[in-house]
Each structure stands twice: as C-alpha cells, then as structure tokens.
Image (cartoon, rainbow, N blue to C red):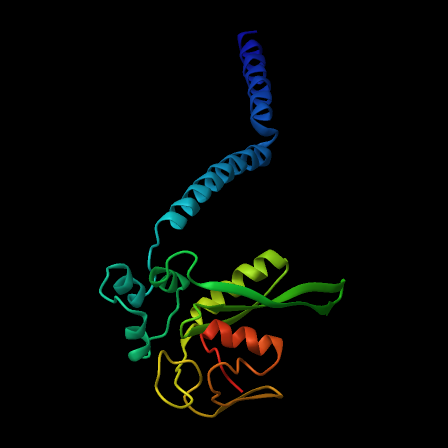
Length: 222
C-alpha cells in the first residue's frame, strides 16, 4: 500500500507539473517559443532606443568620419584635395547645417523582375543634392517601397557629392557664374556639352539640365 500510494503521489505530481508548463506556453516548444517572443519584444525595444540615440549622436565607422567628428578636418575641400572616399552621409551633414543642402527627386520609375511566383515590383528613385554653391551629387536607389527608395537615394547622393569648378565668360567681374571652359560628358547613350555663356543668358537646355546646373551653382551656360 505505501508503495502504491507513493507511486500515485508521484504520478499526481507529474500531472500537476504538466499543466504548469502548459500555462507558461503549452508544451516544451511552446514554452521556448513564448520565451523567444519575450526576448524578441525586449530586443525590439532596445533596438528602437538605440535607433533614437544614433539619430541624435553619430558614431563614425571610418577613419575619415572619426577625423571629421573630432574636428580635425574643418573643410569639405580638404577631403577632395586628398581624394579621400566618403563612405558615410553624416560626413556631408557635418559640414552643412540643416536646410542648407537641397535635395530633389528627379524621377521615380517602377521596375519588374519575373519570378516563378509571378512578378516582383520595385521602384528606382533618382535624387539630386546640391548647395547651389559649387557642390552637386546624384544618387539612385532601388527598393520595394517608394519612401525607402527616396531615403536611400538621398544617402547615395550625399555620398556622391562632388565639387564643381566655375569660371567667367569674359572679364573677371564679380563672382564666377559659368563653366570655365567647354566640357562634354557621356552617360550611356546621352551626351552633354557645356559651353561658357555671358551673364544674363541663363541655362540654355532642358528642364532637367536647368535644375542640375542651378543645384551646382552655375547660372549661365549654353
């Protein structure tokens, strides 16, 4: 009798412990799953907090970024002078106060890829960035959502920011207003030629070209 009673007691103890596990999250896997979710939620919370801190305070990832953040490089031209590659958009933000660097979305067009399940749609965004004072950058980004593509395009354009040389058409009176010489460039099947123009002639070209020249700080150009 004592043996049977002991066995029944132990059996009852097992029965009692199983519902406890079930209450925590079903069977063993369920319990682990619940724990995982809990950790995930905490992780997300921490992630959000870190994101906010990163927005407030920039942590440089490259040597150039650390030099800029420490104030060792005080001018953007010093970076171009030594042909240093800019890998972080925050470097550009450091030299330009908020609002001084203009950005404009030039074009958004959808692209498709054929897969076994059907078509997948994505959006390509081309963004122009400039300070209307001798610096211009063009960036493109492809993403599933338009907002993400625009955000990525702005970052790409800031990283691709380059200095633009400006000059005079005739006498050196006032500030530089046009390109210093005849220049031509080619991208794909498109060829562009810039010719110096006298003051007041404006930018003689397509609307996109006018916008790009204005962002670069060139007021007269053929």
